[in-house]
Length: 184
Image (cartoon, rainbow, N blue to C red; front, side, top):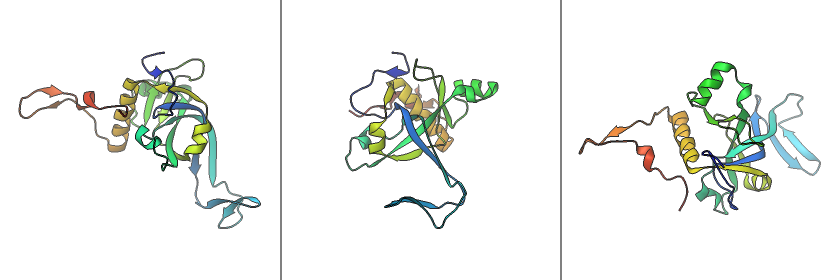
C-alpha cells in the first residue's frame, strides 16, 4: 500500500474513500423536497429555480467507527474529494503543505484516486444505506487518520496543536502523539 492508505477492512470505517458518494448543496430560497406517489415534490410551491445540487464524486467517510457500528446511527457524514488540479499553482502548493485549513491533502493512490484534497467545508449527511452500497476504494492508514483529525481540529477551531510544556516537569510533548485513531 502506502504510508497514507491501508488495504480495505471488511467493515466500513471512518477514513474509507468511496468512489461515488452523493454530495449536496442547497441554494436560496431553501425549500423542501419530498417523495410522494407521483415522484419528487418540491415545496412550498412550483419553481423553476435550482434549489439543490447533488453530485456523485469521490468522498471520504468522516463519521467515527463507534457511530458507524451502531444500528441506530442512520446517517453518516462524508466530505468530497476533489482533484488537486482544480486549484491554481500556489493553492496546490499550500494544499500539499496542509496550509489551507479547510482542505486536507491526499496523495494519489493509483489507479482510482488522483492526488486530491478533502473539502472539510463541504460535509454532507447521507443515509448509511446509500453509503453501504457505494464502492470503497481505499481507507486511510492510522497516521493519515491522525492527520485528518488534526486538520479537522484546525479547520473547526482555528486551534493549532503545538508542543506543550508540562508545568510540573517541564517536559515538551505533542498531545496529538497519543491520540487513538481506531476504536479498540
